[in-house]
Each structure stands twice: as structure tokens, then as C-alpha cells.
Amino acid sequence: MMELLKKLSEAHGVPGSEDEVREIMKKELEKYCKVEVDALGNLIAKKGNGKKKIMLAAHMDEIGLMVKHVDKNGFLRFATLGGFFDQMLLSQRVVVHTKKGRIWGVVGSKPPHLMKEEERKKVVEYKDMFIDVGAGDEKGIKKLGIEVGDYITFDRSFKELPGNLITGKAFDARLGCAALIEIMKKVRTKHSIYAVGTIQEEVGLKGAKTAAFKINPDIAIALDVAPAGDFPGVKEEESHLKVGSGPVITIADASGRGLITHPTVKNLLIRTAEKYKIPYQLEVGEGGTTDASAIHLTREGIPSGVVSIPTRYIHSPVEVASLKDIENAVKLVTLSLENYSPMT
Image (cartoon, rainbow, N blue to C red):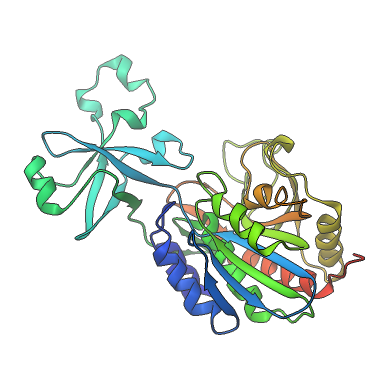
């Protein structure tokens, strides 16, 4: 699975421009499933022809930027797509995606040498940053083919770390995409399984809403990442999740404003983990949410849950996760699907 993880992590696909990721997933999934792409760009793969329908969802998009303005000296101002801690943007190398091709640049700001003492103590907001592509002026920008509205992604490669760990960009939720592919490869069930690579999760769970309406499943499971807290500066009560300690089963997220996992799905996942001795962690989150929040409120309501891979430094280009957790997430969901019955 390492090569697949590398391809997915290094692929570029901000909200509204998930084409590259979708093509990777399509090539993998069409080996085992019937595959289609809906009107908005969701990838929908189906396996099995049972009466009961189960939906799996993993979002293809990653947080990114968009060209908002070009100044007379050829520097780019940008808007953000998704949730950012602004300081993470400083000094990143980025890729601007234009009609003519990819242009590399860097996120710049005033260096400490030119700052006054009070400036050094302030948090630099993204509105005060810019991107330098070496254009020189507005004419240089036009020559490069850069226009307002062009997407911008991070230039970061996938790497293996000691301890069976990996690091890279867009693990949120390309790890879920990789797990989804592996699940569809392995699963054997009497039900109809729909695996959906969703669009625009980072800006409003948009693809999950339309795909769930189309499929109208009996139950659904989102595959995503959860913020691990096993590193300096995070108290255990803020996040007790640990990388390498097993996939995460969500009980509730966004303080209940997002998803409160349906008992049917929660019990199925926990019971399967315990039956097959799969390590797992439970999460009650107060921050973000996942595609499951949109899915469970579709039509008359769809019992939904989330299985996540614990990941350090989420929403940065240097996320860290464990291969063992990904493998156990695949095992947990695959066996849950095979053990699911309407009476579960």
C-alpha cells in the first residue's frame, strides 16, 4: 500500500479541483468495482448487488489556497480554502496551477531583520503574506499564465519515517482514500457497497451531501483522520489519541453539532473490533467534523459513523501517521461490512 499512499499524498487536489486524485482512485477501484463520476465530480464505486446498501466516504480534497490578487510587482495575494493555522503557511514552498502548467513559488513575509520589536511578537496573518513566483511584475505574471482564481497547493513529498510511520501532505483525507480502496479490494459481502471519493469536504461537506442523496444507503461510514495528541504541548484531556494505537471510532464530533454516531454503527464497529481483537480508540471531539455529518442528515436520515486514522499535525504539509493504524482501519471496516446485518 506504500506506493498508493505516496501517489495519493503527492497528488494535488484542493476543493473544486480534485481531478488528479479522482483519476488515481478510478484506476485502482475499477479493477474491483463498477465506477462512475457524478455531476459534481464525486467518484462512486459499487461492489455487490444486495438489497442493503452501505456507503463508505473519503474526501479527495485537501486544504489549499487560491490566487486572489496580483500586485504591480508581481506578487500574489491569496485566499484560503479550508481551515488553517496561519503560522503554518509561512515559508512554505507552493505550486500555482495555471492553464499553462505548474508554477512554483514560496510564501513570503517580512523577515525578522526588518521587523520592529513589537512586530516580532505578533502572529502573522495570512492576509499579510504573499507568494513570490519570481515574476518581477504584472507582465511577468501574465507571461507565466497566472490568473485570479488559480489553485495553489503545497510542494511537499511523501516520506517514510522510523517506527513504521509516514509523513506528507494531504493525509486528511488521502489516508481515508487509500483505506477505502483497500477495503473495496478485500471486502466480500452479500450487501451492495458504495465507495465514494467525495469532493469539497474541506469547504462544507458538499460532495457527501449529493452522493448520499443519490445512493440513499441504509448505513454509512466516513473514513478520515483524527487529531492525535501524543506530542509535546498537548494535554491528554485535549487529545488522548495516539499514533500507532489503532483506528479511531468517533462517538461524537464538533461537540455534538456535527455527528453523534448512531448506535447501530457504533455497536457494529466496537463489537467487530473486540471480536477480532483489532486495537481501537474512542473519540469525543470538540473541533472539526467529517462527511458523516452531511450524510446522516440526508433524506429521512442515514445511520452513520466515522473510522479515522490518528494523525499528528493535521492541516499542515507535514502530517504524520502509522501504517499499522491504516492497516487496522482497513481490517476493522472490512470485517464490519462482512458482519453487518439489518438486526445488528
